[in-house]
Each structure stands twice: as C-alpha cells, then as structure tokens.
Length: 141
Image 1 (cartoon, rainbow, N blue to C red):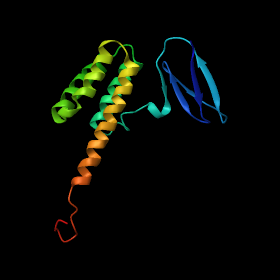
Image 2 (image 1 turned 135 degrees about the vertical axis):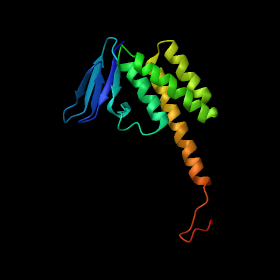
Image 3 (image 1 turned 60 degrees about the vertical axis):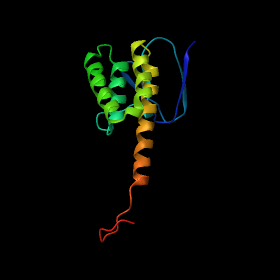
Image 4 (image 1 turned 180 degrees about the horizontal axis):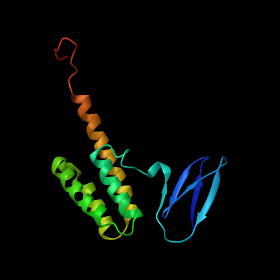
C-alpha cells in the first residue's frame, strides 16, 4: 500500500536524499517503495537542535536518513546515556527509542524521540513554574 502525503503550498518533504518542494497549490502524493520520508516540520538541523532531547532526535533522524549511521549511532548512545543520567525519569522513553533502534524501526524511534522532546519541555515548564520570582530589589516573592 502506498503512503499518502498531502503537502501544503510551499511545504517541503524529504524522500531519501532528495528534498521535494511543493508549488503554490495543495498537492497529494502517493509514495511506493522503501526510502526515508520526513515532512519539513519533522526535520531538525544542527541549528534547530537546541536542547539535549532535540540533539538526541537529530542523531536518530540522521540514523534514519543515512544508511551509514555509525557516527550518528555513537553520538546517540553517548547523548542518551548522559540524558538518562541527568533525568532518570526519562528512562522509559529512552528505552522505547533504544528498542525501536535495535529492531530497525527508525521511524518509530523518531516518533519516540519526539515524546522525549515533549517530556523535556514539560520538565522545563514545570521547573520554571516552581522558580520563585525575584523582584528588581533582589528579594524573593
């Protein structure tokens, strides 16, 4: 069964090693075959991977896109170990990513990595909500 992808005007799609840019009209594509496919909104770059979880996602993305992913795999292993050491409660999500990688389901590993980004953001939001506000005269409120 073909994968159906609908693109908005100007939206980009990665198929294999090619970037497809849609014209000025909505388009529906049917894709048969076995190649990595990512929508523009799901693609991270080294410039947009600004948090530890996003850098983990980027490493998984590189494993998904590139057939020779040894460098990305090594980077992922190191970053995921460091992340779990810093945030032990993230272990179930990192375990899910690891299992998907080990079974060769790299697209599913990407989806699990998105959960890690969301989890990281929730932790950061929670931490910023708990931080006492400080007035300009240096006193806590």
